Image 1 (cartoon, rainbow, N blue to C red):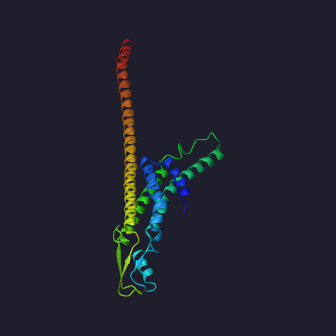
Image 2: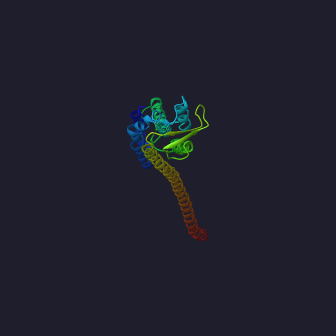
Length: 260
């Protein structure tokens, strides 16, 4: 897996991201991808080879291993990292779409034509919704994979001994031993903790975007209301002045008519 290419693609998201997303991206690549590539793959490299059972029945060890490990931790984390980083590419694609529209608009109407977007990377309109959707998608993926990890192994702990029973071709109850369970347990807790922190950051960013949008809308509404009130007040003030002016001119007109 070429993690450098994925990192190069996602690094472009930082130009359009909030502070929460920048911290999230740094956490993913430093504490998850780097740990996965450098250490986790080697720790789980012997999981099937050193999965020992107290029987020599052909096929029993493979059946027991498949029963307790329907999918390897390391492969599940690889899928999780791929799925959880892909939504960020939606933002890049949306910005690229805006830039392409802007380029075609200049080619059609000239370089001095009005721009379609004041800033193609600014989160407003459809890009804001795309960014928010990517956050919800990341949040769902993180929670789903944590649930799968907890559900498949009845928790995040790895026992030293697992008992394999009522599985053909294993005779009766077979005891099987996991290779280096303590080391694998430490890495499991570390990856779960990093994933939990990423979930918290994603939730904070979602609330930040929503509250910021509500605050901006409320502020714009108040400004528009004040401007309308000010325009009405100015109109009424001018109308009162014109009435006073007319009332003052009326006696003069009457006096002139009397003189005539």
